[in-house]
Amino acid sequence: MSRNRIFTRCRSAAIASLCWAFVTLHAAEGSRAPYNVLFIAMDDMNDWVGAFGGAPQNRSATPKIDHFAKGGSVVFQQANCAGPVCGPSRSALLSGFMPHRSGAYANSQNMLGSALVKTHLTLPEYFSKHGYRTLSTGKIFHKHPGDEGHWAFDHWEPSEGGSGSRPDPDRVTSRNRNLVDGKPAALPAVKSGGDEGGEGEGTEFAWGPTRGPKEDSKDWKAAEWAVAQLAKPSAKPFFLALGISKPHLPWYVPQEYFDRHPLESIQLPEVRLNDLDDIIAPNGRPKFSPSADFKWASQDPRLMKGAVRAYLAATSYADDCVGHVLEALEKSPARDNTIVVIWGDHGWHLGEKLRFRKATLWAESTRLPLIIRMPGMNSRQDCPRVVNLIDLFPTLLVACGLPAKPEIDGRSLAPLLRDPQTPWPYPSITVNGKGNASVRDEGWYFIRYQDGAEEFYDMARDPLQWTNLAASSDPEIRTQMKRLAASFPASFAPDVAQNQGGKAEKEERAGNPDPTIRPARAAAQLK
Image 1: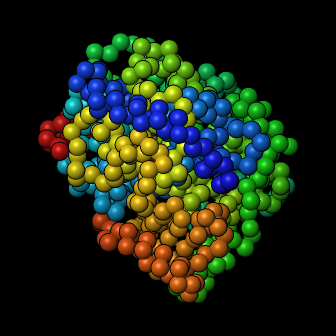
Image 2 (image 1 turned 45 degrees about the horizontal axis):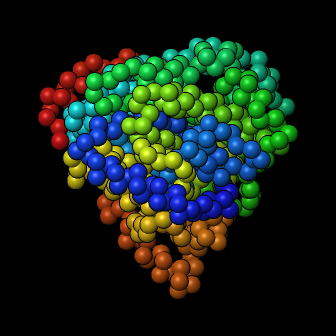
Image 3 (image 1 turned 60 degrees about the vertical axis):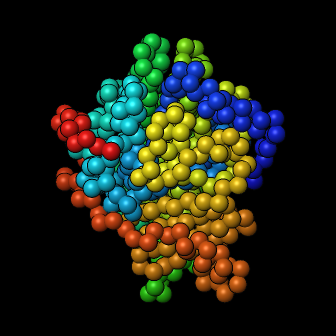
């Protein structure tokens, strides 16, 4: 994760433009039409979006998102997730409740089992209640047996892939099957040791080109559906949610996206092989070890580059899908009256901390892309303040003039949309399973685990989190640790019941959407 380009843009003229855009939202509220919302999620997208400067590559993998951001937006350079895996992150954002309040800590826990979620409207439900037409396709809510989040929208469109989503078996590379380009690898197989970032063998660590073109792929079809919705007149303001599934594993995308990133051009992230040595469990032993994915790929530099290349290819594919929708919005009658929110659900390791995947409390896994455009914005402004996806629910209520919902967590980002440089003294909290959490601000990063292990990092001097300062006796470090410690969750809600039926990826595909969920929630008179 490169940090040297994060805080480089601060133009007073742009700030003035943003101030004007957001102030008129309120000043003209009585005379203007309600704002629409275009809400775009990207699965497992880290800060390698060009606008965030995290990738060590020489050119951006996301020119379309970058172009959109440049045309007028606030780019939140230090946005974080509430939970560093899909389910907890999305459940928190969409319910408004942090994992330690809802009890939804893992992908296998459906937030609908939470006592809080049983009594409160989710974000799209709240918009529907207050006069919006809500519609969605792709992955917005995390999927569970019989539950794809369909119940939360007035219209939900299932998404399916074709040949553009199916891999060419003769060209698949897979750690789980020990294949390279469809053939048995001339390398020792490496099985999961249980330290795969919380996923184990759940999602295959694999990549390769698909049989067909993007036009016959799942995410492109979902984007096409969203494009069609933007072209239709709407009697009500709309809340349109589009979920892009890439760059989630496996990295199966059309060949054209691999071609954009030649193997010889790939730059690998900076890695220290002794990076985990100073993170010690209470028993005195190292708390972490390199993951199976890392051990397998690092046996051959070309294989390591191949993994990074595949992630970039999947990222470019996602960028094309998002860009297709953004270009349609520019041609839509809703163009000047639509709030756009583009977000990733958490970060992703690409070798850093000697692992791939997510589900850790390190910054590679918690930091994510977040871009917001309000109507009237006409230039890019970077916001260096630490924020969290949990803030999006209250932010959108303020932006759209809907009644406040004081029970939920987070705080409106409206002050930062007015002025991205305004002071923001609120730390960000990420919860990774019951009893484990990180607390960070702009300068410092504190991690505590249920077993008592701790990590503490000086983000100004050590943005890659190579030196754990938790055992330091330096008075300044002890003072900062004490200050951030006050923001750790004081308690953790009981676990929501686990899904029945096996591993996460099988659960996501199991069963048809349950048609009884929506009417049952409607009858419950939720808050």
